[in-house]
Length: 126
Image (cartoon, rainbow, N blue to C red):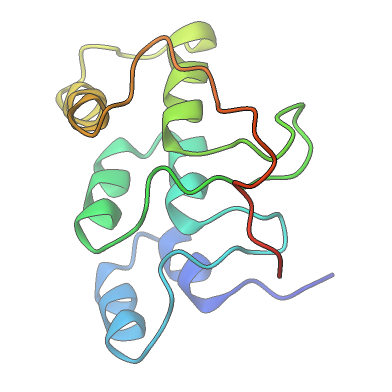
């Protein structure tokens, strides 16, 4: 089993100060973990919409795709997990942070319902 990357460990506890420190010292906010997820994908999966927005403001790419398994074929990104939440969640779709995230995704050209691109060159090789 691979150790958790420091950026992901800090994000787990929403330790913004530690994340800022790591970024200032060269951490790649768009780096994949062992599950081929980025920290922003990981937080979208956890439905931490406010934190997703915060990470996006610090350079995290919400549309960088990755992931292994979960029947996604490596097409997970923030828009994917927002659509899953819309489809299956029993959450608050009117929450200000969720609505802000949806609007921000739309502002970069994402359309809902979101259907992931099915090309083979969206994942980076490690």
